[in-house]
Length: 188
Figure (tube, rainbow, N blue to C red):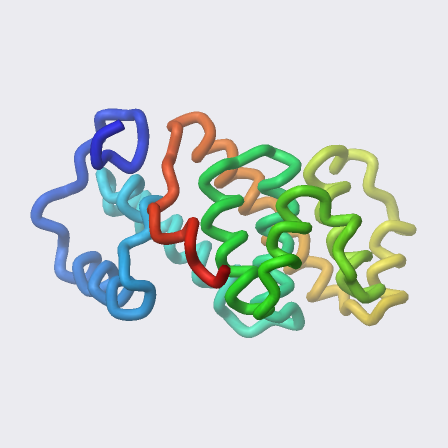
């Protein structure tokens, strides 16, 4: 594979609009790279802007879910969907945010073996249910989240993050999106 972020021949807009270039520059400053998922979407700036806005809202905006919890959802959903890109990128984020490389690996391989508290376990059970059988979700599934302290807004956020990664996993797999090499060694 060449330097393309996907198997599709969709070259990045060149030159990038100033707001996109500024966003990419900020990524390099904070992460040391432009994530390939952003490069993949950069063939159509409107699509990139929509993707980035949704990602930034779900993963970085204020929420009753911590950043680590949101990354944990991303990894568990990606594990179920076998998404190489997201497992690599978000596995690195879990390792970094938790300070625990084992936790990242456990979530990638089989989240049920991870030493999770009741809140995290309920959250990931719900994310798994949304991923594999969303039409079977009933009130008792949402109530199980409430019983461990999640608010209805938190339940919305769990469902939103889960839905976003199900979509992202499918896009990444369908286009053979490849993670940046740097992710593989982070926080190990």
